[in-house]
Length: 278
Image (cartoon, rainbow, N blue to C red; front, side):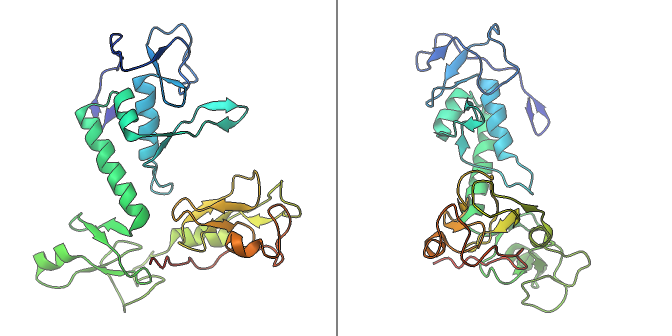
């Protein structure tokens, strides 16, 4: 196990640590673990058993998701409780830090990444491709953004494209693209060209776009194909209908959770809603 190329020795709990609850059963986060393994296992607050290595690996994998699948700064238990149902109980960072036995280097990596992901959930932030400092986009309908650090260093305004991250080219403001070659909105392309899917438990929904943008904040979302047609946006926490794209409160005025929407299935989206934060 390593962070940024630094090797790390295998971790183990101190058997004399009375603050932990040790259990004599397999590691619930490691399917390859056997009951005969000598490694001490401790019980998380949700009741599942972990080792410091398995907990570290799982939580780091959640933080370090690819840019296409944004990382998660809240840690939930992935243990299977019945069939394919996951535990999903929320672990506090304090609990993770203690039972994963995080090193100083790991704590720094975790806390910096968690702070960045938390900020990105509520603000539009990115790194300037030139100076690598954090820039916030306050006008969510304008892709042309000014980097104050580069502007101060160069003694003239430096603007870059929020979408392709290259130096801004062309007229501004614009919400679709700049004039650089290859400047495309990948999320929008996914929405416009996604496959169709069915929602088996919703009557009559045989073909619905498999990827949606939240009608409130524009966050990309998918349906897990179980339960009713409504989902809660992971970003703004607003519930909406995956089929007709209305807010749940509006959809339910003329429909219900498991029957077709009165307006039918909304087509693939060709634009991404802008979050109008209060």
